[in-house]
Image 1 (cartoon, rainbow, N blue to C red):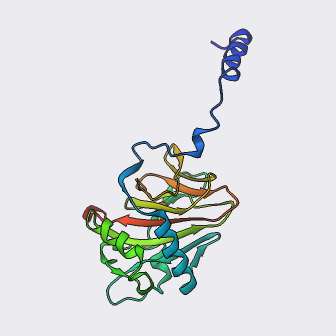
Image 2 (tube, protein in one colour; image 1 turned 180 degrees about the vertical axis):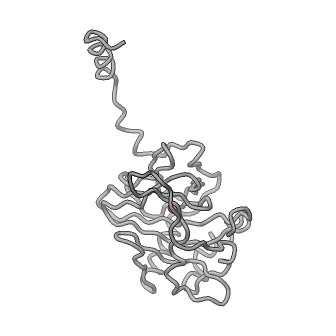
Image 3 (cartoon, rainbow, N blue to C red; image 1 turned 90 degrees about the vertical axis):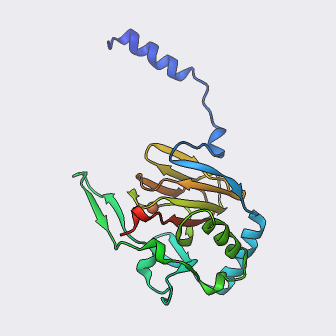
Length: 219
Ligand SMILES: [Fe+2]
């Protein structure tokens, strides 16, 4: 029951707690964001990315969100901007109604590596991921400083490999939020749940993001 005495006491218990200001600079998983038990060489990933960035340009899909396609459909070019986004579901206003945006993408069709990635360490990563899981679109996604994605859900879950990050770069799925350190770790993110990525740091953040093309999520 709310009384002034009880409310003062309750607030005191909150104030007297020791505040954790350290663990937010590390990874904390839950059932939606899981660190997988294999890793890649972060130095080789960064070297390969530097080389690729000198040869090709990221496309800006929306403000502060830049994408570079790593896989493509057989016989298609990578120039279809729609392929860089794909179907997602979101709630945009105070009606709380969910709406579908953009077109469904057949993730399983994205089997070919884009030329600039061939012969690089990313080809090895793609082989390693594909030997374990049905891998769909793979993109390198860069987030500018002080930028966040929409609050949305995707038709399929994703694999994230952070390449360049900072402690202010966070990933949120449903009610869980964590930083994903860029140390070669590979993360499962269940993006079938509502999620966003944000970069609250003052350096850009770059992740490799691979869609998991399990058959039940094909359009
Ligand atoms: Fe998403």
